[in-house]
Amino acid sequence: MARIEVYTKAFCPYCTRAKALLGKKGADFEEIDVTMDRAGFESMIERANGRRTVPQVFIVGRHVGGRDLLAALDGKGELDALLKA
Image (tube, rainbow, N blue to C red; front, side, top):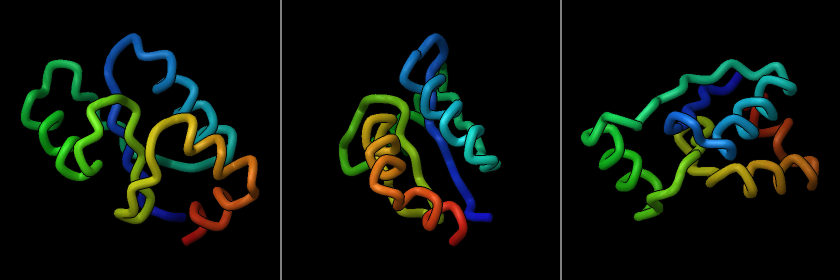
């Protein structure tokens, strides 16, 4: 299965939904909590082309985006293929 990284913050409902979608797909992912991690947050911003919101999802190093874009990929039937990469 693909390497998946999910940048999150505590009490973020969008983060919870993104993690639930990945869990429903049976995907293992690394959660990177940037709530109190300024260096991690800055790294996320750099990797996500300036996006400052969470979650930010990366699959095999490719920036997928946030929860809405992850759900859109799933709706188009493209998420499963990415997860199997």
